Length: 478
Image (cartoon, rainbow, N blue to C red; front, side, top):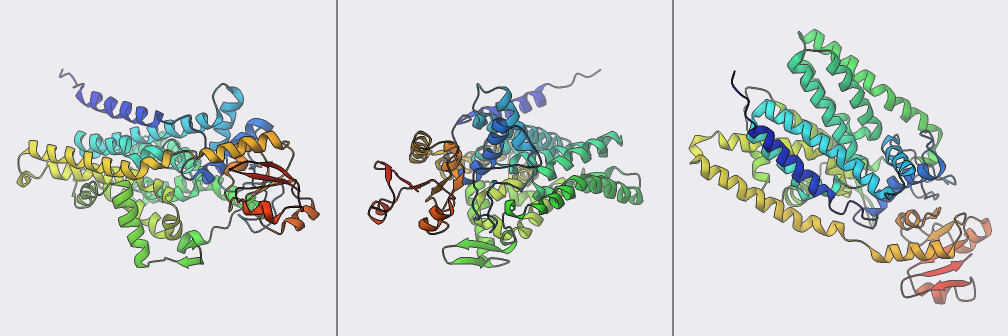
C-alpha cells in the first residue's frame, strides 16, 4: 500500500502556525485603535453581560443617546446582531477574569478566523490542488488587512468564518452524499446569519455544493429550500423581535446607496466613485497591496474541471459589494466579508499560472509568485500597520473620568458620536453634545460634561463648575 505523503500536511501546518502567530500580535491591546468606536460598541455588550449577567434578548451598551436611531435610548439597548459573539467573550471573561475582556474577544475572533482558514484550505485543496490551497491559505493567514480584522472586536469576521465553515460542511456533503453534513451546514449558517445577517450571500456557496451533491435537480431544489429556509428562521425571528425596540436599532438604509460626508448623505450607487473606492482604493491598494491583484484577476479566467468554487466565491463577493455600496465605501471593515473570496481567487490564479507551460520554466513561475506575494503583503502592511496605533489620550481621559465620576453618573462627551471613551471609562452617557447643555442639565439627563476643546473653559466660566482640568481634557459638573 502506497504511503501518503506528509508534505501536504506539513504545508498546512506551516500556514496555520503562521496565521496563529500573526493573529497573536496585539491580542491584548485595549480598544483605542482603528475603528475603536465600532469595536467598543460590540465589546460593550459583552462587558455588560460579564457585569450584569447574560440576557440574550436585551443586549445593551454605554451609548444612551438618540444618535444611532433618532430615538432616545435611556436603557442603552443595542438591537443589531443577535449577541452570540458578545455573549461568548462576556461569559469567558465572567468565568476567567484573569484575562481582559478585550483579549477574550480578540481570541474568539482569531480562533474563528483560523477555522475559516482551515475550511478554505481544504476546499481549495480538494477543488484545485496543493498549490492553490497553500497560496490561497497563505494570503488569508498573512495578509495584513485580514490579520488586523481577524483579531478585532467586530461581528463581521466571526460571522464570515462560520459561514465559510458551513460551506465546508456543504462541500463534504457534495463529496460523500451523507445527509448529516447538511444538518451541520444548516446549523452553522443559521448561527452565522444571527451574528451578521449580511453573510446571507454565502447562501450561493451552499447552493452550489448542494446542487453538486444532490442526485437530481429536483432534489437539489428541495434541499436548498429546506436548508436555507430553516437557517433563516432564527434571524427572521430576531429581526421581528427587535422591532419592539426601535430606540435600539441604528439607522441603516444609507448602507445600500449612500455615504455620510461633512455636507450630508451623498449617493454613490453605481457611481464611478463607488467603483474607484472599492476596486482601486480598497481591494487593489489596501487589501491586495497592488501586486496580488494580478492573481485575483487571473483566477477569474481559470476553467477548472473539478468545479467552479472560485466563480461562486467571486459571485458571493460581487453580490455583497453591489448590494451594500454605501456601507462598503463608508467603512473599510465592510470588506471583511469578501476576504475569503479574495483568498480563493488568489489560489485559483496561482493554480492557473502554474499550469500554463507557455509562461516559462516552472521554477521561474514559482519565483514570480513568491516575489509578487512579498510585494503585495509589504505594500498592504504599509497601509494597515497604522491601524494598530493606540490613542493614548483617549485612555488617559477614560482614567480621569473613572476617578472623578461615579459608576451611576451619566456623562456627555464631546466626541462627535464616538462612544469609545464611555466604554473604556465604563460610564453610560452621550458621545456628542446632542442639545444645549442648559437643557440637558434642566432635564437631569447627565451629571458631567467632558470635552477636549479648551474653548469651553471660557464659554462655561461661571456657568458650570470645572471639576478637572489638564492639557488633555476638561470636566464640568452639570
